[in-house]
Picture (cartoon, one colour):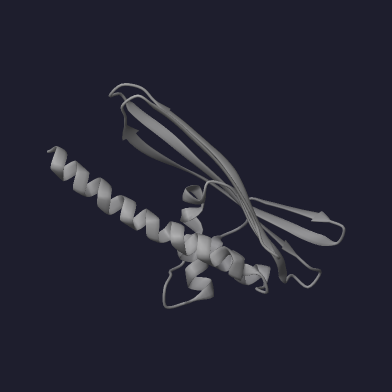
Length: 151
């Protein structure tokens, strides 16, 4: 039974890794796209605000993972910057004994548009694993042979 669960978990992680990779490679390619086109693939943004004539849109997602652990504490901090995109986040997880653990992966994907609705910046904060949900939609938008709509 444990072997079957291990195989199922491994296959699930492979699928998530593909979406994670699609997201991290694809979100910078949102720059230059029209916001309406992006919303077609990612759905309606969770928030929208106007700052100095530029619109800022955000999509949010939280995904959960389960695991068991020995006695371990782990944390990571990461920040990255590019000319038109950036990301940062903090992750902290603690497990004790052999009890089940639930881990939350939060993500906020943000884009900034000019007055014509063209994206000039893209960034995310939180966990790229939480952003994996957006991977298929971004792949479909930036390379139609690789992705599908999020619906």
